[in-house]
Image (tube, rainbow, N blue to C red; front, side, top):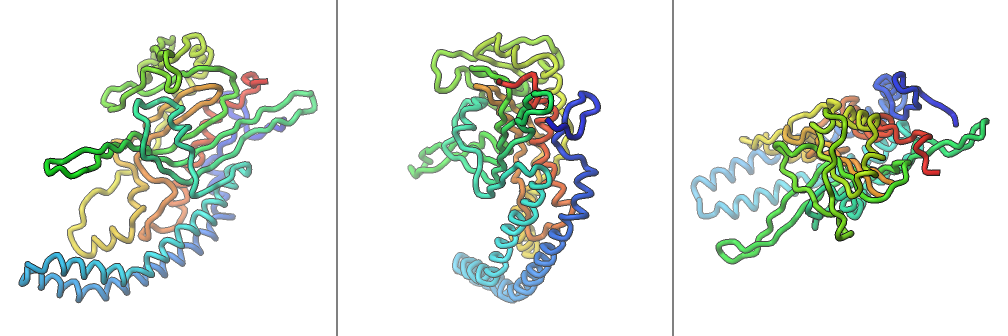
Length: 383
């Protein structure tokens, strides 16, 4: 098996890309694409500004009518909203086309650089059944959505000159949002919906290269974390999840481990693997605060409307990149709760290296996962 970049500490092949490699590739191949898309964004911004100017006088007239003819408030607001939608119709269409181009041109090129064995489907995502199979949360979602499915493998299963077969790790990941929707009657007897977000972030499904049955979950300690963990392995009645006490005290201070088989849990969570799991889960990742301030002027409101999807890329301070792991029937499920939308950008967000850097870091996590947890080790091969 051909060996690529080496991990200086563990002397293993590394699949993730370094910042220096990204910088070089961006300047050589990605920057021309980004600059062309940025020109289109600037043209769309100019159109938006021209349309916004046309809205100023009608807005002032509407404000005057609301002040002097309060009974017509609803009709005036509705008329202004309809006129605004008409004015910005072309802007919204251009913004939609630009988002598609970002994914088809810029993001696809970035993914091919990170791993040519990845395929990218912008409108697909990891199936709901995989989320349920991870068995991390007590409630199953009855509303489930996502996008940006990336699927493929690292490594290879070629036979080298010494007759040793290499290992290939299959993995898939996407952005998802899992919600629980409950119906209830309000005080007036009307049916309302109560929506609770179970999870929002990235889900990774990885071939663990270690044959085992049953379920083992590794989740953060629940201090200040409002999650409800299942007590039984879903779909298999009678197989109770029991807590496991392991030797690594630092690991046990960070995580709660539950399993259907104490022996299998220790088979998976070796001392070395626990250490790498801990290092990956506690690695500092930058979290940018989400702007939740309400617009106070018409200008601010227009900016918010144009930038839908931009601020959503920035997670709230409460998300903090919480990591969950589960191991079931030879696969590892890794869920990284970020509370944000990935691979999206608003019209006010420049298409430059800073934006592509965010995309790079999100996708590179999958390769770091394989590197740091050493899922491609030959000694763990299923064959």
